[in-house]
Image (cartoon, rainbow, N blue to C red; front, side, top):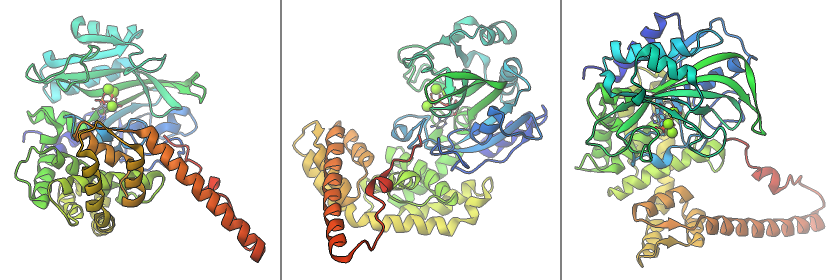
Length: 467
Ligand code: ATP
Ligand code: MG
Ligand code: MG
Ligand code: MG
């Protein structure tokens, strides 16, 4: 293709290097020393302390291609995979930053220049949004860049609440944040969806490609904001989304990199129809889970490891749906390494370990998957539109079906899962286990004296305060 993903990474970095930016490597998916965040969900995560003023770097302009994960934390896109043309769990974000150096004018003008003069996108297909009261950004778009006012949309609290807006960006519930200006590409009238700000903006016709955040505040836990030491710029453009445009396709899943992964998924699952949505899910999830292993996250029952387990099991279930009854997922790793190993050497270096971890998890889940699916199929056979929470909990507890996996199956059949019922059943079991545990403890104390230190279930179960 005219622009492969490798070409786009390089073109982006070269463009910003030529404008005084230091190229910084991607940081791991697990943020360093940041208890407020589950995974690196954007390029700015590794610069959080620079925005806050507590970390200094030898540069004031930076650019990167950042590996991101949006699953199980703030900005969770797990449920979108397989349903939209533009969402992945794992994706790469092209970003440029100013730490107290340039601000809105340079950021927007460079974005426009790269898109229209280097990538040569037709300007009439581009739209922009600004935060509702950001006259400065509005004027830069309309008066300096010359975008017609009909294609510059002001967006306020469209999600309810003062800072709940598509045009107010927050990394997490606390920390650096600010108003933003987003650039959209119109894929044309053949695709359902309305322009930004319209009631059907969530469709896939007008796809958001680049967010320019004007970092100005630090948000505290109570929701109050105070200004950052210096106004900064933080931008993010989805590599797969710009690649789709440059390669003349609509969906991210049709770009060069994904075509290869989807073919590999089809091969391993014996699927002929390359448009089967389960193949997209598997292709997406092999990236997320392989990169997670490469960054040290192994499947477990809590925190990040549980998100990892949930993603792997969802992928396996989609393979099962396509007819696989034995481990297949780990066999995609060499295909992934062939596509992404050059850009991410630590992925290639960990190939065997990634395969081993995935295979072990597959073997374990395949032991109970078929039986669990039988139970679920039987429960859904009567055509009712609500799956009892008790049953979802039984699937979780006995067959290793995470709640979101059960929901994924149910959604395909237009069925809701009684979530409150699921949590109630889980609570009930915990209370019983606790009572039984206490009873055992008392007996142990009675007969053997205080031999062991019981730290209590609370300590073990204390929910990690990460979003
Ligand atoms: P959307 O509204 O489409 O969900 P977003 O507003 O959540 O995107 P941002 O948080 O602004 O996205 O992230 C910056 C850029 O990263 C987006 O403009 C988009 O190009 C890309 N991006 C965001 N989420 C994803 C994803 N799940 N998969 C692929 N690219 C993404
Ligand atoms: Mg989003
Ligand atoms: Mg958006
Ligand atoms: Mg956005």
